[in-house]
Image: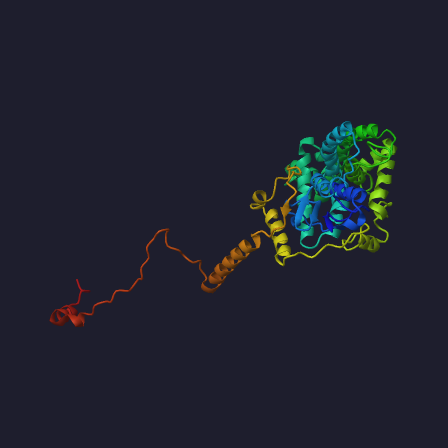
Length: 430
């Protein structure tokens, strides 16, 4: 049976990642329910390419939405191909809009869910905390947050990031240090100035954000033309699945700063209806209105647990096939989080989803062995330092060592008459 590994559920959706949602929608539309199961593992290290979604077919791993589609089409001899009835013009549109959605849609979700500090700290990071085990809750969200900020730095929407604004305000107010202004008055003035300046910057940024979002929503609305699907009246295509992945995360999350969903609901009602209808077809019970966060919090948290069946035929996360895998996962994430080793070890945050051949077999890397050897060496060195109180000294490289023997001192009594004569002389007198 096929296993689709995805990031876990959030925002009343079966996954927090748009590409994972697209893969779920595709398998729901194309593959019989008895042929696959959904595994919300939230663990990209299970895939050799270290990305989700990842489809496991026996010993073969296929990572990435487009690669998964290619494997399903090949495996079923075209039976599981949602685009089999498309014309050549439709296929050209699918290719163009797929690239368009993956770039524009990802930028909008980065700005809405990650770059906006209030949305990230209030909604996005707690959502990760509910689907990740410890210590990944402290390692993975900051990595995805940093990657989203790196992908959107060229847009210069720093006013959405309250952390950046706070640092700028502190640097500009350092000149007040050492003055006779009372601390309470100074803090009040700083907060009012910062709040006013931030409101102006966010108001100006809102116009730019709306323009950026309209650049995605307008072409999709024209392509939809009031139909049930983007390119067809009676059948979804792979483009519909990808559009659902990005648009559902733009529409359904209830955020403190809901600028993206507000624009979508106010100006594009037909697109909203399209997303809601397709979400009910693909996601079932997950495509429902979200409860307020302060009501039935425990019940809502339990409903988003990774062990809860998400879709018909789904299953909880499977146990790793090797006892080294959980250890390896945590070591990978810790190494990627280190200031010195992290940039060398992890892939660039600007790197887009790459295309890999569909025959990546599961393998266990040698990182646990290397880490164990390094740990044993450091433990032995630490024990020596604690026991002797000093670091061990080593000879120079290539130095030929030899055993050192202390020379025996000769006694004057052993020199006979000459020794007796010398022993009677008092050399201390001048």
